[in-house]
Length: 167
Image (cartoon, rainbow, N blue to C red; front, side, top):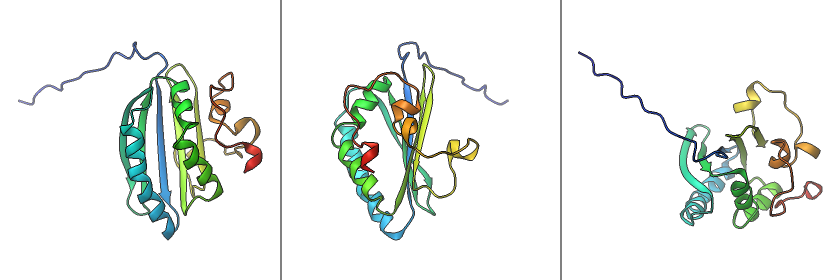
């Protein structure tokens, strides 16, 4: 006789502002392999520093050919995620990336418990995630920052690491 399935669920009520973000980096050119491999230790160090609001970090592998790696992170709230993304070392990583993607493509998709989703795709050939069914548009103006794409009020506690007029 087959064993019964052990079904469990979770109580997310202690996390009313929970945010889940998927992030990925894909090798688009040979030099992108070096870029991706350099980020592994940097990300591990950033996670080991236990940024305020980061509840869980998981590493993911999307594909081997082309190499496409990623992560899923659970944050207490959008403000914690945004504050970390706008601070060092992420601030420098993002500034460097928008100047030169290093032969890679990058994307993220963010899902918020209290409503709202947003995404960005930089130098990503083909389509992934929302790109597969939603109309694409340039990430300019009101679509430039994650906060604005998610239709969240305010400017955040820390200024964005990259200003639209600088790219």
